[in-house]
Image (tube, rainbow, N blue to C red; front, side):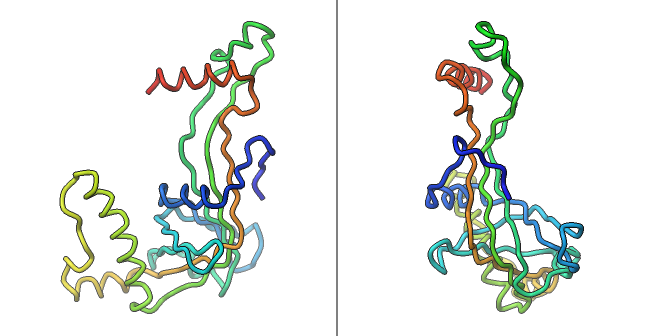
Length: 205
């Protein structure tokens, strides 16, 4: 469960999926083999959204085979992927209301999207190769579009080398059942305080 007061809640599902696509990197949390919160596992890794099946689609990615998290998963285990960006400290000294009432405290602003669903492992090389290829194409195309040189492709590497590398990873997909977004951006402050936060953030670059 995500603590998410109404004034920070983002319920625009399309915007939340756009956030995931733009971020492309998250924290994957799963229950361990005993199925309790005492056995939570997590890994930070690239994740790619696919629109099928509707309405929310799925996330694809892969574990290193040496990572024990995947070994502790049963079929269709509940999983949570957390994506976060743009976090920063907010000083009470920034607020005009500090001068008026003194009733201010520090806080932290951030944006996050959490996806819940069921995780399925994909262990065959022919299942893993499309995941690796899609992740590579996504991030290499962005790098090339930014003028950072020619895009690298999985097919640029020798086929036997690629096959050997695939033996060292385990693919997975998560059918997304629920999305929740939280954009904590001082919406609970006065317009004057919000403007001051924006001005200070702009000044800090």
